[in-house]
Length: 168
Image 1: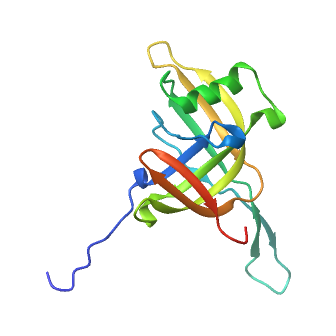
Image 2: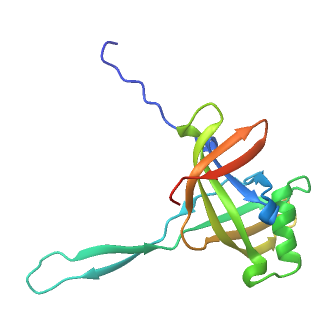
């Protein structure tokens, strides 16, 4: 048909999340293996005001408190699970439960170079177990800590590196 526009939608599998399991040496591993849902909830913080001269209130966004809830089957071959499970087994808290994640917009780049953000997080273990006949499941939350660093991720042969934008 003439004039028909083909919708070019991005697939969920083109939004990557990596977890740094190497601390300051940055060893990025893909997060999400055996997770059917992993959505960044922006959790906007707002204030609302209305005075006697208005029929409709005004709401301002004053900040965000993002997080990602993850629930997945345990895989002993998943290096992200090994990192998370160490936090669970040792009941790590405060800075011992800190990590970095990297969100990569593969749908929005090319030639192995993609827009990305590096986000400091705290890892909150929510549950471990599940029903008797189901696979062993772990649920946890990445709580964002402060502002993300904007930059570019380069993915080459399974290896990931991150470069911050100048000025960040």
